[in-house]
Image (tube, rainbow, N blue to C red; front, side, top):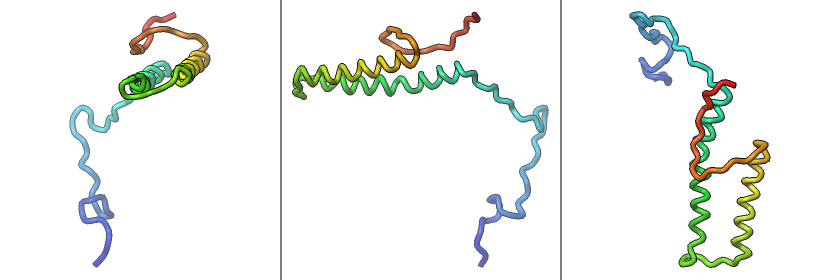
Length: 110
């Protein structure tokens, strides 16, 4: 018995799909290329919830009923987080403030 794909599963000798009919026959939809800003906004908005969750998880460690830590340990954690934020600000060239984060595409034309 010959091995291979069963008939109708894209094997040799299968017929190509039937041609499309109607007004859109043969017309491939075109995708608009994403601008660099749109890509930036999309990626930041998809990544920021992970940052929020990670910081919330660190914040939960401050619960004195569940954990013990020294002031020195607490400062080490906070200083590390500040250093990470500083490095992000440095990478962007300036800083900003806000408690909630949702970036939008800037529609204003300079």
